[in-house]
Length: 441
Ligand SMILES: Cc1cc2nc3c(=O)[nH]c(=O)nc-3n(C[C@H](O)[C@H](O)[C@H](O)COP(=O)(O)OP(=O)(O)OC[C@H]3O[C@@H](n4cnc5c(N)ncnc54)[C@H](O)[C@@H]3O)c2cc1C
Image (tube, rainbow, N blue to C red; front, top):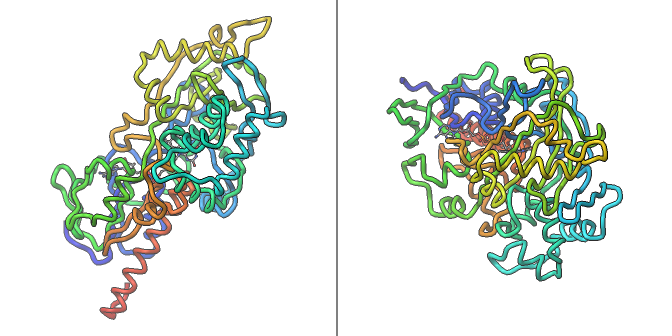
């Protein structure tokens, strides 16, 4: 393929790559996005046909609405969002009790206070958040609440989490606490971002040699800059051969930053058996640490063929996800239904989940061949500043993707922000070069 001045190759068609491509396309002569899988969107994925709206296999909620590129994009398209209260309620599977967000138990309050005051917490290098909690006098019950309410949400377990990045995240989180749901499936966002972009699907980058990107079949694209947005695990596993090799400080950060595993269990029912007001529960001591019910308005429903039905999503990360992923599906169904039966039992129907059950779909993110996990989290071995090292450009080589966000923000807006940052860095480099050679970009 012949080289065209001002060509940028973006590796990965997730939110970071697509947004960087959209921003660069209006300024740079040629932008090509190469994507290893057969579809755009990366971790934004959905499954249709189970209920009358597509179910989100990956991200689902918008975390925070202030200072958010994601909200800027959503508002630009004129789309709406629905605000949710999170967590809606807690279900304690050990003693089968429940409490709402407005009447939290003393243990729940203790855990919230601990995480609110995390900046004051002290820990030795390499110490886990679980160790810090134990040292602070947390009981086993408080530790379990912290596991399902905080660690699971971070995509981790307390044993795998460390203080430095947890503090970094706390300091840099400036999006507010709102929990929002887009009024349509997230695939619409991906479609809009990808529109008009030259995306090569089934094009798996295996080598980046200065300014040439080569795929596993030996096809190559010459270019002036490369933006790498692949998931962190792909870099950790050494899928891409860099020439010149990545420097030791970047390699060190790649090895220290952790990426989680997650499993989503989709339980499909003939009808809704939970109260209409219910949408989410954190479940200490439960088989599924968090469960929720989501649906979309007419925007999402109109185009799927399925009729009737209702769905509950179970979400588990780290060791719990690994355990569920290793179980036969019948066992996952049995344990999930037992939990939901206990949560929603009534005198009329003591096993409402079992009696309404239709089907189950388990999504194990560690098996996604080009992603191999869920998202990065404040890991035990990571050091402050590691994310900055992950995102630092090397000559004509630029890095984006959720793992490279300096605020340790693995959310959708975090991914978009890194795409925006990388696009700015590419343009700055091109302008400097153009000025040096007195050419017009
Ligand atoms: C289960 C789950 C739940 C989540 N929940 C939420 C949520 O509720 N809210 C929220 O804000 N965020 C959530 N997230 C996180 C959010 O999905 C991510 O932060 C975001 O989508 C990451 O975008 P990205 O562009 O950085 O990476 P990706 O979307 O992973 O894109 C990278 C792309 O690179 C491709 N690729 C890999 N290797 C190569 C190669 N060698 N050559 C070419 N292409 C390659 C991959 O196929 C992929 O398409 C969730 C994620 C998961 C998995």
